[in-house]
Amino acid sequence: MTKTTPPAGTLSGKQQAIPLIAAFMATSDMPKLESALNQGLDAGLSISEAKEILVQLYAYAGFPRSLNALNELMKTVEARKQRGIQDAPGNEPGRAIPTGEALREAGVANQTRISGGTVKGPLFDFAPVINQFLQTHLFGDIFERDNLDWQSRELATVGALAATPGAEPQLRSHMLASMRVGLSAAQLREVTNILAEQADETIARRAREALTQALETSKE
Picture: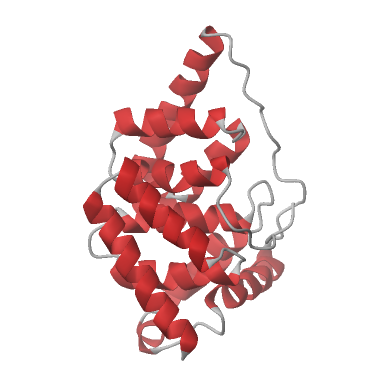
């Protein structure tokens, strides 16, 4: 699976469901999460991709929400089986995840590409271990897993951060990251519309404001 794909005019059905799954996972809204999971699976999201989205999001929304959401996915898949729906299982990662220094190097490369440059600053001088964890675990262990493309990973991150009050700086950063991995401004506007129509206007407003600021930054 490639890490990025060329931008298209509109989001696919699978892509439309991802920010909703992420937002409802982050807010622990299980009824709406079930609906979004069904929407994604109906659109062709594989079970493996759905699991990977919810596993990745523990890094943004915490283990308890991730575990609860995975349990909801498990129940949803079983209920669909009982209705005679056989969802595609999908793929596990197709390559071995590096370890040790090779893992850190891969994570640094991934972080740099997604962030648009070397990540540094006073915060990371003050607490360098947090960047080590970001590099080796989030951008290493997680982003090296090739059973979910980077556009899907960023759509999930945007959805979760938009649903998280106080995470506006990170949301702006991930709007920019979304464009770096190939999502267009039009597709990201579509995300904000989907959140407004199917999630919550407050969530959508955060996403719209972050996208506006990201587009302004990208022109500088």
